[in-house]
Length: 325
Image (cartoon, rainbow, N blue to C red; front, side, top):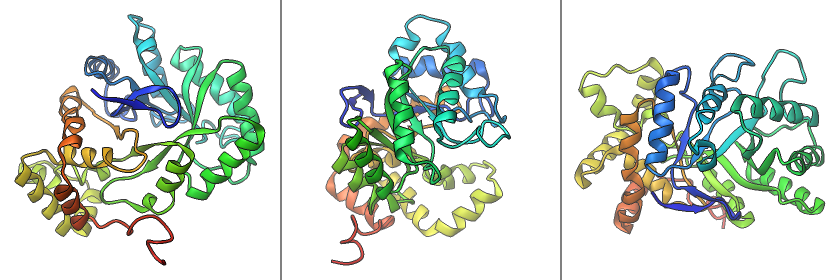
């Protein structure tokens, strides 16, 4: 496994981030623990979760699974850079969501309890909160950091101007601000190249792409269907929308002798400001297969990258050059 700095921080994280959203709803607790153990064996030290993961309102199912894994000891917590999130509803009442100082305080304490740890390495805002000023958000984060409950702060699903506003507010307060941004980014979804990636590069944020395989479309979907794998109605709809590009993509992967999922991950690892994409394996076999992507990222030459740009054209580079001059 290769490692890199987490944004402009001094923290070292693996180039692949283990996503845990499937833990509970799709993967049993026993299998989830086995996947995390295997991730450590493979050198993956960066795990991502959220208080809302588990699909049961307010229960923090996935964080609890991770917490019971940490409780097994054996250096599991010490070897792990754990990232979790705050913003989405954890109850029906109005102050059980978003980024008020009250909710941030309560949500952090609840995550710490579920994770069975006394600190969170990376505490991420799951979404922008348009109703709460950044001065209030940063004051709450400053208190948590002073208390030793969080170390770094990240964002998710922020626009470029949100990142700029957050960072300038933090700078005025003498606070470190954001070190990461978690964005929806893959070969099919490249809008963040306009504003978000340039903002992250300029402010020193590491980008953590979520849904790197486009919901499965970039994971060899045509091959799987040909082998009799069933597809959801949504997957069928998206496949028909993108079929010409997906056909070209899988043919290109066959040409270079690589798995489509690994090519998609490797491409992301070559993009501006990207720290590491979030992989969401449901099984150990799926996890084992992703490690090749780190090696492949070093092997993709300019010709291969140009071919991928032909198949999946991006927005044309950063703004405003992408649409003006």
